[in-house]
Every structure is written in structure tokens, then in C-alpha cells.
Length: 128
Image 1 (cartoon, helix red, strand yellow):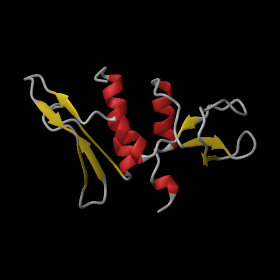
Image 2 (cartoon, helix red, strand yellow):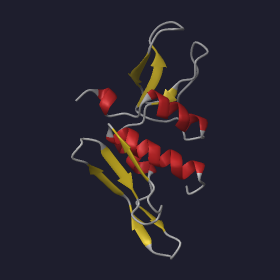
Image 3 (tube, rainbow, N blue to C red):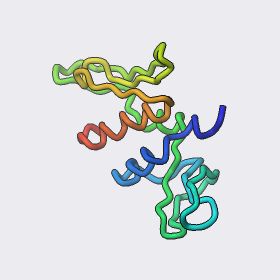
């Protein structure tokens, strides 16, 4: 499996950085060589820094995103709703918290993107 299918997409990684998620991960998105070049995934074990005037952002892995997601959320009735992650028959990944978000779920081609979409929603709605 290619690493690009195991990490969050560039678009969602940028959104997560914008929302203030820590920029610490095993992989990150970076420009290949010079400004204007395509972004590539690089490996490193240090905090992200700026390069070529373009923002670098963490390319969180499925495991890193899993560590960030709460395993359960308490709904408006005080009941705990467990995190659910499934691969559907259409091959898309599906993430939700049962009845907590009342029909709010996220689906994506990769598990990393589905998890990232949920994290973004939770952060934007001050649930984490």
C-alpha cells in the first residue's frame, strides 16, 4: 500500500494546521525542491518548520489520527456514544459516533481522510 493512502490528504492536512492541531507527526507534506513544485510526503521525527515560503503541514497517519480521536463522546442525554469506523461495500471509509452527532458522519476514500474529517468537525464545533 502506498504511503499516500495511509496519511491524511494535503487539503485536509492544511485545514488541520489552520485549526491549530499540533504539527508533530512521522510524515509531513513538503514542497519537493523549489517553489511551485508539487507537494510530496517526507519522513521526519521533528517539529514542522516553514520552507520556501509555503506552509508545511503534518501528514498524519491513520494511527496518529486514531490517537487524536476520542474513543467516545457523551450525547445530550448523558449516554456514551462509541467511535465507529467501518469500511463500506462501496470501498469508502465511514466514521461516526452513533447517536451523539445525530446523523453526522464522514466518509472518504481513505481511512485517514475519514478520520481527519471527523476531527475537523469536532474541532470546529468545539467538541474537542
